[in-house]
Amino acid sequence: MKMLLIVFREAMAEQVHALLKEHEVTGFTELHNVSGKGETGSTVHFALSAGANRMILAALPEQIAFRLIDVFTRYRTEHMTQHNEGAFPLHVFVLPCEQVV
Image (cartoon, rainbow, N blue to C red; front, side):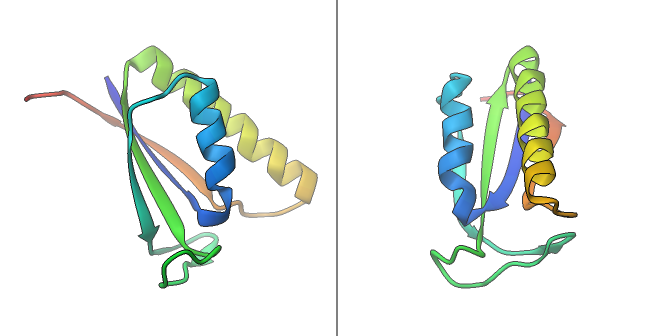
């Protein structure tokens, strides 16, 4: 299994949820109003701001995890190409995952 950690701007929630649903990812944990600082700058620190981040953690079989990574890679690339932007507030990380309980 793999754990996907998906970090994205609050304003992108609908699109991210649509991609998860399209690829039949029905189980995940979502954290709202996640703050931080990275290549796209600092996030706003108050709830429900379009500049705030969300984070989704999804434990998935390896094949589904890597398929979803490809989906998010294409989504990010297409958006950056269409909007001619250098940085895009969507990041996906993969971690080894083993359910122990």
